[in-house]
Length: 191
Length: 394
Image 1 (spheres, rainbow over the protein chains, first blue to last red):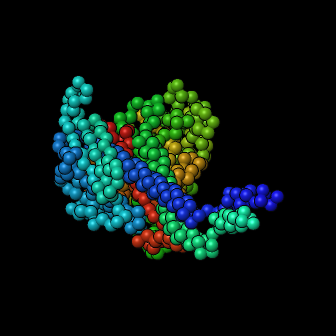
Image 2 (image 1 turned 135 degrees about the horizontal axis):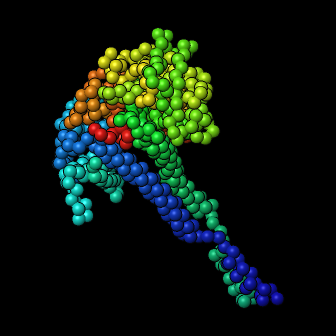
Image 3 (image 1 turned 180 degrees about the vertical axis):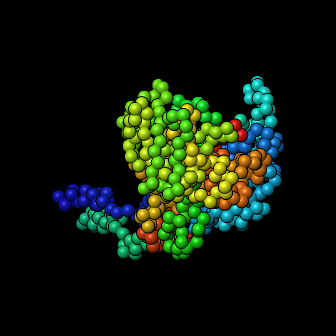
């Protein structure tokens, strides 16, 4: 009787044995890969959030410059044909520096040959310094380059708009290594 | 016997194969798990706080953009709506007024605090005629005066205005719809159409308009004899109040004399942007329209309004440097000495911060900014708006 019962007992125990060390470590490895994957996902989500924020800022800066140029009357020296989107041309480019932690907001504006640096400070004052350039950037600053090109008598479709000018503004974030790079371009026919 | 031995052997071997962990194995496994799992969790935790930091900054960005979008809509329409049945005026006088705060320093922002006081923030007033009230024409064949030697209430002046068809007397009194009309406390602008341009003044009605024959009688706080105001209560728009004008400018822009048949009285409904600092740790940008005060964005630590003129003191500034002026009181180029009618372009910059408390809650990751050592990050956005009605004909 005993002999006929015994073979079942060990078989049952065999099924109930715990994990081996190898199995445990493999499962920990899988768990770790999962956690690291989640962390990487969060990291990429943080980067994408930052990217979206920078592009939105770039878009606003582009529209700011368009409006800035649009205010001049026809024939104004600030609307003379010139400038390039591929290189900085004096009078047709400026820079905006924004910091999240040092408080000062800096913006250079060049028009009619004079560069102004506007510095808005945390104590509510705005200082405008002719001829100054941007302070050295720190780790947290965002420096946006703005270039604009002014084309006289632009061709839109098949039509030449005589007497008008086309203003094209390109804004590029130049000091953050983000992929894809942050750029924004927009255009307006004035008047 | 032999078979029994074999059986026992088998059983013992199988038991040995089916045994659980030894204590050593268990401890190694737990240690490995703690080390790797701990590393993974700390990475995770680090990213989680980065993630929420990012969320706060995105929230800040969205709130600044919303506020700027609202301001863009209002400011671009500054000075529109004047031609509400009136086309005998060549150019209407005004679209926006700006009050710049230039004090700065500790009065605005005590060092090493998160407190920002009212002297940090500018005020922008966008002036448009009240769409619910028709303009009234000055009645009679002679000119009436708004000015007295003692300006403002309790000194009052009166003027008769007349409805111009199809406007009715009842519409002047109570508006096109309920809530309109020349009622008590209405801010009105008087417009004089002279030969060399438009001059004006402003006052606040001290009584509801009353019917007087076919005309309407207005009672309002008196202005000075030159058309400027001495009392803020009589000029909530800050239009003529900061009167350190030179005499030429006063003569060019303001008058207290308004003549029957050509001149107009218009009720305006200003939209005022200012920062409410009544809660010390939460300066809030508000938009005030009539009795409604709407918060637009909280945690605003910078609100500056610059303006650019294309003409100054009557001199065309075509081809000018294009600089923006942040002190309306200055008469040095590019500033305009309170000549708000010279404004052609407005630059609004807004600086916001993340709520100061969020970094304090996690001590392990305490962040302090570098300008006042407080736990918040900042972001700024700026726009330039050309009020369409003021940019024309230049």
